[in-house]
Length: 57
Image 1 (cartoon, rainbow, N blue to C red):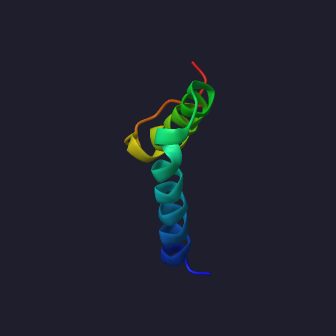
Image 2: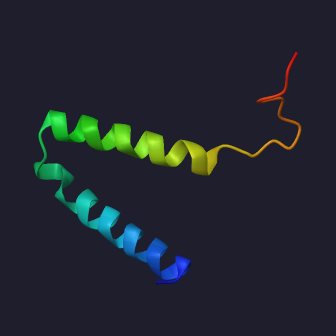
């Protein structure tokens, strides 16, 4: 499966989950929000080329 097809499949599954949220309870809404935060944060964070991560000092 190509990356584009895989991405579209994920988007379709997320859309299906979003349609079911009006019937979801508070626990399900909270869990879904946390999952979205963990997925969205790396996608929205800019990549820094001058990062000092892993460098001593």
